[in-house]
Image (cartoon, rainbow, N blue to C red; front, top):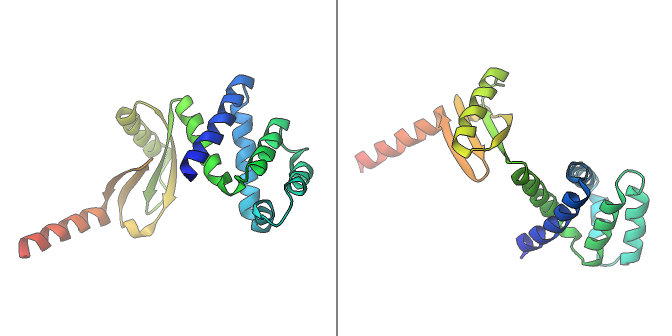
Length: 180
């Protein structure tokens, strides 16, 4: 149900963004709002609280965001307050970002390595992922020393494991099958 809610509200915001040519503006505003709610969880709790009147919450949103965000974004927040969907704000924002990436023919990926990788390696990984997906790739590097070596690619819900740890685990499982 929460996924359907996120898709419905993000789609509505996406359509307004397309209509007004403000997709990037809405995305940056939504990221900032989500960031604020994560940084100040008490603020987010106020917005979610059923004990506080919706009109009071709308006043708080208006005071907080009227000078930093577009009127469309403030109105969007008021709508999700009216519909009691503030608890779904993070998933709405994630789904909205996914819609924008799909619209732009882009995909996000994470390269997990033991040490930071250089731009040359990043470009090479992007090229290979482009060949797989047919989409432009926004690649970030995440450091995790537990992979031992190699690279683990997280591409949406897919994982491409080229790590030493992954290879050792496969070998270990093969050996267990042979021994049993």
